[in-house]
Image (cartoon, rainbow, N blue to C red; front, side, top):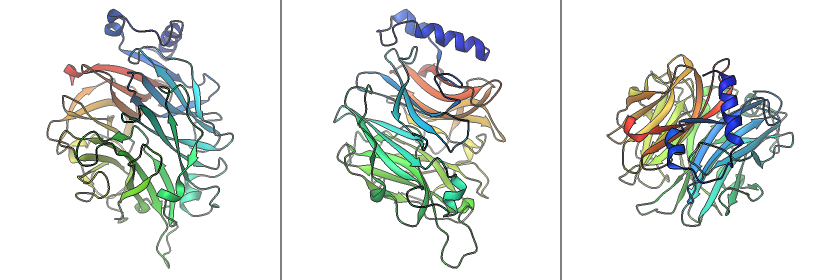
Length: 392
C-alpha cells in the first residue's frame, strides 16, 4: 500500500467516532492504522513511538512531534493519540509536553494498576544544543539533559504539567540522558510488586586527565530508575559502568518475565563486539543486575537501532526491530520461549524502511506494534499494526 493510500485510509477512519466501542467485525477486519503521518498536524516529522494500554483498555500512542525538521534537536513536543478500539481508529492529537522551542522527547509511559493512572517520563534539553555538544560538556546545566514526570488519572485525556526529577536520578558527572524510549514496566509479582521501572541510558564525562572529549561511544551506558510510590519520587537503580568500548549499552527496553525477573535489552552503540543488541536480567526489581550486559547473538539481524521487548501474559517473550543488519528496514518480531536466552524470528511485517518500535498487548489474542516506517523515507509514518498472537 502506498503512503497516499495509507493516508486516505487513516483520514477515512478519523471520520468515525474515534472512541466508539468497536464491533466484533470491525476489530477482526482491522489490521493496521496510521496514528501519525509526517507533514500533518503541524509537524514536519513524527518520531520515537511509545505505546501502552490503560486499565480501561485504551491504547495510548505517544511520539515526538518535530516541528521544524526530522532532526533530534529543536522545537519538539511530546504528543499523544488515543484509541478505544484496539488501535483501529484514533482520537485527536494532543500535546502532552510542549517544547516551546526546546526539545522534549523520549517518552517512556507506563500504566500503574495500583493507582489506575498513566505515568509518563520524558527527557528535555535546550532546542539550541545538540547531543554531541552535550556529550562533550559544552553546555550549561540549564541547556543539558533533564528528566521530567507527568501523570494522568483520566485514561490519558489530560496530564499534569511536567515535573523535574533530574536531581534524583542523574549524577553530576553524567552528560547525556535519555528515558526509554518505549514503554516502561509496572511490576506485578515478586517482592517488588507495584514498583514502576523505567529503562534509560546516559553518557558520562571522561576521567580526569583523559584526552577524550566524552563524545566517544564507549562513554554510553544503560541504567534504570524506579519508583515505589506511583511515580511521586524516583530512585536511581542499576548503572552499567563498563565504558570499555566493547559493549556500549544505549537506548534500552525492559519487560517483566513470567518468573518475576526483569529482562533488559539494549542497543549497542557502535561497540567493537560482534553484535548490535545487548541484554541482561535483574532479580532485584532493577536495583542491580544479575550479570553484565552481553551480546545477544540470536538477534544478529538487527541493526544499530532502538527495539522493544514484551512478555506476553500467556505466551512467549517478544522482541521487535528492523531485520537488516546494515539498514533500518524490514520490521520484524522475534519470539523467545526460554526467557530471552535465545530468539527466533517469528514474522517479518514487510520489507519497507523501518526504525524505532514499541510493543503492547492489545488483548489475549492480539499484539500491537507501533513503529516508524515508510516507502519514500524511513520516517514517513508511525504505523500501528495488529498481529494475532497465534501467528507469532
